[in-house]
Length: 475
Image 1: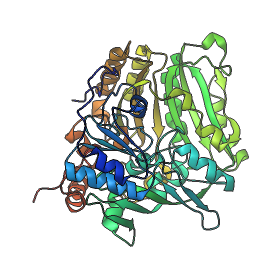
Image 2 (image 1 turned 120 degrees about the horizontal axis):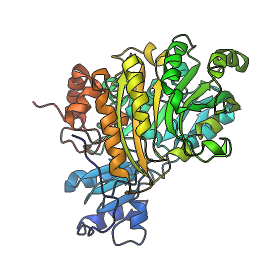
Image 3 (image 1 turned 180 degrees about the horizontal axis):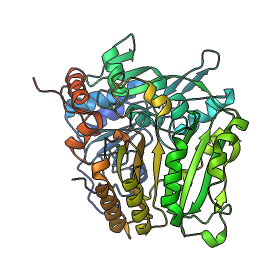
Image 4 (image 1 turned 90 degrees about the horizontal axis):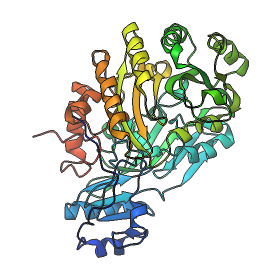
């Protein structure tokens, strides 16, 4: 059973000093923050405010040498060891109690080759920072829906986002990685060099080492896309979902959409009489010819009178940042997710019923439409699983703090449980702390065995275990 990851409070005693801390500090070019430092409480904050953990030290790595020093220190001392890039891990696995955190947020290098259409990107880069550089050349790496997400964690789990149906997942753009191993070594992995490791990091998360730099293939995108939300009364949810199911069956791969249910935010673009009322939203992102996109979207625009139609031509970077206000740092978040083959009548009926139980004005959950380019990569080509799935549900309960959080958490669990028989898998980046069996479900039995064998080769002592952990295969 999954658990709440923290209390959100700050009243626990700090762990005792690590006797080896001074030695680690001397080995770093970057900073080492401990509970004795005045900035410690700020330094240990991560995106999910419900997670409250107190590491013995946080190493702000200034380069690869610092990452190697942190790894060797953790291996030598046996302390718990977490790795943090953007700190967006749903269950807060980028933080630990009483151990060492290797913080990669200062590794911000981005090198674009617009002619070769490649980008070399260090592990501390956030999605919005990468978009800022690549869009200068009308190019992009398909990656995510919130700009303050860390690129590293998103990529290593797969990487779904607004460009996925046209161009594929983030891992499908990956050409190579540079990685620090559990022994403190430094290797490169690509299709031609350490190919088994390259297979594993494309979906297997941070189980095999710390990726310090990624090399991506770039895709032509924008600068303008036809994108944004079209909003209806949630009372029309069932009818909208049935229409949506038929409409997306024939849409081109250039269109990625997600259906979102929530209470309307008090935004100037939404009529004031709808603020705080339940709404059903279809968010679109069309990346091809804008006139063709208008023809594709015409049936959706004609589905009943909307509360607001905010889908228009805009810069791709503007669309990428659209959901940032819905998922800010330090809110309390709780998620349950699953993949499903299609939006059956029963799924639609249950969804329509359960959205009426949303209490928090901050709760929202997307249903992503998959397929397209995702499904054109072979299922066994990467560790990522679920390429044949039709949709991903990411049911999220969110509150400003602890008040009401338990009720939202139970709403999420009940909703997820009501749809259990429709689950076909789960996207590993959307897992909370749900146990070994759920991690195995994320990969399937055959891939999970292969990943465990790979783990035994690259991290036999399971140093990199504070993640959606794949334990080493037994001898």
